[in-house]
Image (cartoon, rainbow, N blue to C red; front, side, top):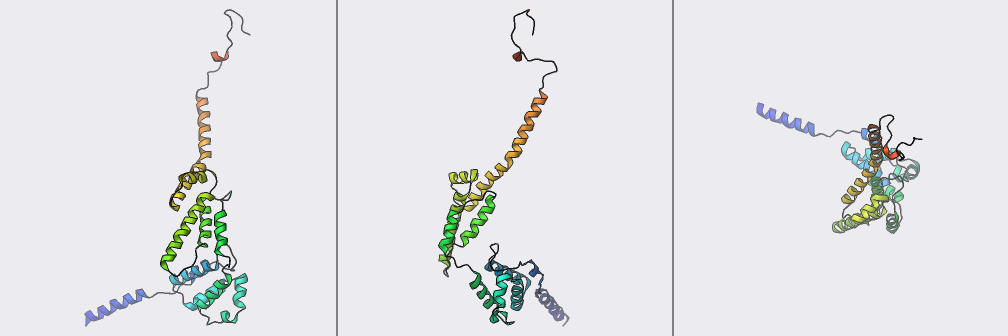
Length: 243
């Protein structure tokens, strides 16, 4: 009997440890969304909320309330102006569908193709920042498909477009080096650009070091006081006075 009680107590401890507790503190890490921001789209905003919900064990009601609290500007006005969405019992999928349909851009894929094709590195933009900007554009060129094989092919095509855009959009020595080497993957291209970029960053330090070395060497080999190099003296007849 005692052994059975001990076994039940052990099982109870395991059940207690496995219980998930709700934590709403992660809601503070979610930035407000107005639906029009270029920095974060409505789909990225909703994806962040869903991720926090999974980690923190939020209920569907929690998710809906947090989304409504984080919507500002035009997005907040859109929700508050529709009775179906302001209803306390509105389902998350209904709210999500309405927001995505309203605030997802309606521009054709060809528009993003052109932007990706014409993109060039900004004057103050690093190679990593340029690649991140190209990657965000490249994702918008991928067509939707329900077939997993088609999705894989479309993703591979998007990666190739991104690589081509990065190689031919980079400026300066890094761009020339990329076009000469013609890397086959994004990782190879990024490594090449990083090496060239780091070398350019080190140039001012090398110049300062070389200048300091030359000055030090000159100081070390300064001629003694009063010494005149024979190369600097005029050749004069023996016995003639020195002017």
